[in-house]
Amino acid sequence: MTYTVTQTSNDLSTPLLSCVTGRKPVKVVLLLQDLYYGGTQSQTLELAKRLDRRFFDVEIWSLIGGADFAPRAKEYGIPVTWLTGRPKVGPHLLAPLWNKLGQGGVDILLPLTVVPNIWGRIFGRLHKVPVIIGACRGGDALPKQHERFLWRFADHHMCNTSELKNQLTGRLGIAQERITVIANGVDTDKFSPPAEEFKPVRQVILCVARFAPAKDHETLIRAFQIAAPHFPGAELWMVGEGPLKANVSKLVARSKQRGRMRVYDGTLDLIPFYHQASILVLSSIGRSWGFWPATPNAWPWARPDASAPCANIPWRP
Amino acid sequence: MGQAGRERALREYSLAAMMRRHEAMFTELLIAKGIWQLAHS
Image (cartoon, rainbow over all chains, first blue to last red):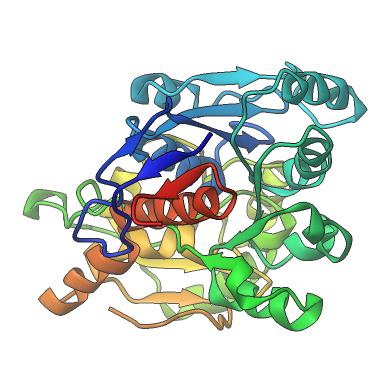
């Protein structure tokens, strides 16, 4: 049995689908490792919120516990299933994932982040999920999720930068047409220039990023220590959560510039931070690591940005 | 950001654009797999 699509279009100004007849909405599962604060999690929620419910029945599955974004998922009306409740990944997540996929009914499986891309693809293929899309987000994704071996388990790939697509085609020989580049999206309604009374009154350099090795906060702190004497009013604010947060806090506490550096907890509402920022900065190690999630949010403010060398900056505001 | 930059941001890097590209990708894959079929095919 087939189902009829009367119109498709990639033109963003026209409806993608005018009608699909003959079946219930396609079930799309967005498989995440967790719902801790993070750019991928944020983008996944925004995608799930916006997919047309007439055609797509969207669910989020989370391999482990972590519910930072749970309030937002609830607000958006997105069903979330936590396959396990433990705070960290481990072999304990395999049986629940295998069983859940074994229940069937999934039409499109889109695993996001490393661990889902490994086990979601393997188990999804074994359970004959019709469409599996491998996602590569971040410069370390390819080796970490064993793309060299596992790319064949995906029907298609999705990257958030053209640099990653080049790596997939160049290094692994995946055909161009099997890869779609979809840049992270900016909420251009929410992220708009602040009212006059909220314009920044300080000289804040803002870094919104997970405290993870790929984000390299250590280099950022060293750079700030070099620059700080030349800019006496400058402050460095770092916002987020992650495994290296305690280490970064220690580095700050030991610094001579500790009075001018702050570490903030991750939050669902980042707008007050952006309103106070004069410069946004990411010191990510790789060429495209972590650049997109924060920097596009700066565009409405048209702040200058500083970033580690990045091959995927198509233009500057 | 000037008007041209804002328009480009909306076109290329807005959440709406991100969502539409996902929908287009899903649609093409569903058609390729024979789950959906174009009316004229």
